Length: 147
Image 1 (tube, rainbow, N blue to C red):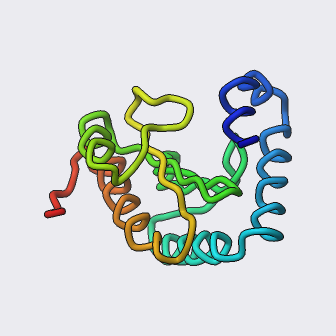
Image 2 (image 1 turned 135 degrees about the horizontal axis):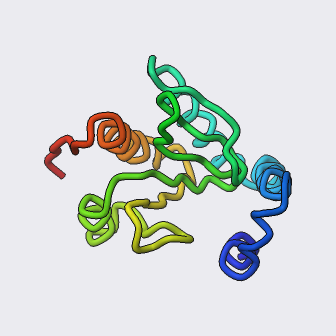
């Protein structure tokens, strides 16, 4: 997979101005052309998140769209459907161990998780993870949920 190769082996390219945004735009074009279910899932997720009062959508520094409350980033969605969310280290472990999320694709030992939006069937879980990340980033606490 090209995304994985670029992110892992050519990470230094992210320091070149505008290059991450161009790369992510290429991912979005490929998604638009070749993976319509993934595109629908991404659009539905973005629309649902954007309806939340405090959430602001802005271009992300590494491409894709970032979701913020003020200056605090909740997460970001890449053009290939990869959703990255900050949930703290303990919650990351709680979600990665049973397979509800993946370790972050660049920083696996951080408080970030990654989740693939592949189809509309993934939206509910992505929104649940987003809600938890949002609560964690805005209050410093996790909400408890029975899984």
